[in-house]
Amino acid sequence: MTHKRRQALYGYAFISIWLIGFILLTLIPMIRSLIFSLSDVTITGAEGIKTYPVGFANFIEILTTDVNFIDALIKYFSEMILYVPVILIISMLIAMMLNQNIKFRGLFRAIFFLPVIIVSGPVINELLNQGAGTVPLIEQYGMLEIIQEQLPPFLADPISSLLSEMIMVLWFSGVQIVLFLAGLQKLPTEVYEAAKVDGATPWETFWKITLPSLKNIMLVASIYTIVMLSTFSNNVILTRIRSMMFAADGGYGYASAMAWIYFILIALLLIVSMLLISPPERIRKEKGVKRYVSIKK
Image (cartoon, rainbow, N blue to C red; front, side):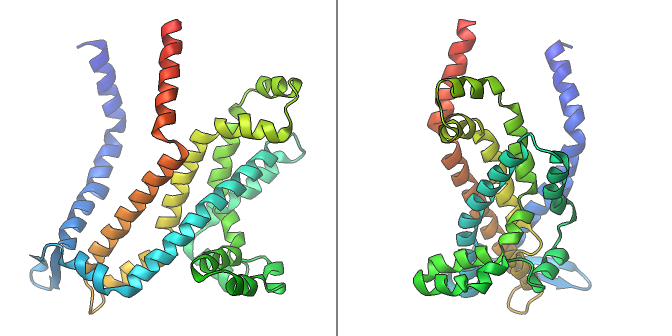
């Protein structure tokens, strides 16, 4: 056996547990869900689950008649387009502050990461019910009412939702702060010292050195943020899908079709975010530079 094949077998052996778990717990249920989405599913006591193929009838019915689901999707994705950049910007700013040489830096890092450990659906619901999700000054000065009056509904609704849950944004920023902090700590200090000698201002240093160096971290953080918000237990779309599984006008097939529509839209949103943060042209240029450097070496 060649050394290359032996190394490949070692690699497959290490990921075999994950592969088995993915096939049994993810791939097979996804295939089953796809079959349900293309079928009329009935559950009987004697024969269990019975499926009757109906093609794309469930998808057509959802997209043409289920107005509530379509409105919920539009509202949710409009909020997502606003939430993701805000979470990334706040996470980067907090990471830059935590990266400074200050006292009790480790304590502050632990405080910002603590919500990731204790966050859950019931905890979030209780905080929102007690009015802990918003900044008191926003409600005190009537900023939400001003936004609703001055902006059109498609802008006012997501902005108002963001401001009313501003504290929740910090709760969803723990992992992103850790990612940006790890990226900042890998940046060589010599580059900043050279830029300072050349007369670069902190603003220019951020745009010319820090931000370009963190683009890969930003891509990972954006993907994580989208997936986290889309799969959170308090998600209104997931709540509606679960409720339609046992509804009289729904069922397993109908709910599975809704889930696949939601999955496809999330996948498209991930692709768009990847193209915006790391466009193919930049990737080709980077590969060309790396290839040129390796040839010169």
